[in-house]
Amino acid sequence: MSTTTADRTATPTTEPASAVHSRGARFLLLFSVFLCAACGLVYELALTALGSYLIGNSVMQTSVVISVMVFAMGIGSLAAKPLQRRAVGAFALVEGVLALVGGLSVLVLYVSFAWLRIYMPSMVVVTFVVGLLIGAEIPLLMTLLQRIRRQEAGSAVADMFAVDYIGALVGGLCFPLLLLPTFGQLKGTLVVGAVNAVAGVVVVLWIFRRQTRRVVRLSLLAGMAGVLAVLATVYALADDIEVTARQQLYRDPIVHAETTPYQDIVVTRSTAFTGEPDIRLFLNGDLQFSSVDEYRYHEALVHPAMSGKRSSVLIMGGGDALALREVLRYDDVEEVTLVDLDPAMTKLARDFEPLRELNRDALADPRVTAVNADAFNWLRDAGQRFDAVVIDFPDPDSAALAKLYSVEFYHLLSHVLNPDSQVVVQAGSPFFAPKSYWSIATTISEAGYRTTEYQVDVPSFGNWGFVLAVPGSTGGAPDLRLPGDAPPLRFLDGAVLDAATVFPLDRRPQEVAASTLMDPVVLEYTRNEWQNY
Image (cartoon, rainbow, N blue to C red):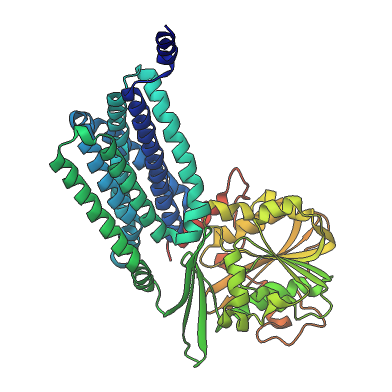
């Protein structure tokens, strides 16, 4: 009697072996969904980031990648319908091909850009293929999930997409926080490709090993091993491939290159016609300075703003510390705050010997505080006030940079200015990009400043322009002059500054709009004008 009672008591709490197996298999399959979703989003982000680095125009690159990929995913979902009868083999094959194409996508596009100069067509093709394969995943996975345990369609879809979206979240966060800092963009996608291959092939074949013919399993595993071998080989050669491809983009030998979460940094070195070494810094392919004539640019940028009070100075941008070098030439400057987004740039200025020699080790000066932060957000929380401000951002050729040339930005800037403070802004080329230049000047005026526009010639850049501004809408324009105690300069003097305010007839003020956060017209001006050069 007692034995019968014990048996009856135990029976309801003991699950059949098939149920336990079903639960474990279902968990593994959903885990595979999670990993594949994370990998898919990393591919998408990598393609978007690469286009932004190489081409600029991040809004266009993002729009093209997302729209092409979503369209291709729809095509892939339809194309997967006939494959559902052989869902196990089809899914493993799709994942193996996706791991190979996605893992090599950044390398293929970089080579297309550097050697073949057909980036946009290549990007569309690669994005379409990746999207096609990602789109085929869900129908096949849904079929496999139903094979493990039958569910109502709504419940199965809810489970599948919940895990898929969580995987996308993790992949989206891992890309900037883990993959880029640890591996870089090229190697990072190769690592993701390897994870994709294992998650998509091994896991599924293990779950359905009893339902798959041995020859099919061995063939798929051999194919996966081949994919992993290709990815591993490319990973081992990645640095050499990247250096060789990158060198195709630059005339002079590259002496330093790195890709950060914010930009692509390249330094080249050659011998100038004068016999001096010519060190050049490029950010996302755009020249930032040449050591042969950078003093012209930085003297014109800094010294007019130092003609008033200057005990506390703010430099925004200018992570190479060359503008900082000029500011520190004044002994009565008591403190300087330099705000630059990319810590890799200020580290390069501090540690890379050719650049450190050029900036005279400016970041080691005890008067200097370097802050790595987004300048717009930093201004919102800044509590300090400054006598002079030097703004040395790259040209506004992306949405992220355009906000730093907006009415709202200059309004925020006014909150950190002392009375009678002076602000100077690098504003691009009045010759090559006149609408952009005068839009920046108009934007500063719209924000409540009085301005004086001026331009000089820098051989490596061509004609280049600046705007000197003081807060307040009443009163005269600021005087463009050198401080009475200016240190010895190589380029700038009073006569040069007098001439700098004279613009030729074809480059005088134009009727252009001010740029705002909601209507960044300076971005369109910059893109349209510079694409002709």
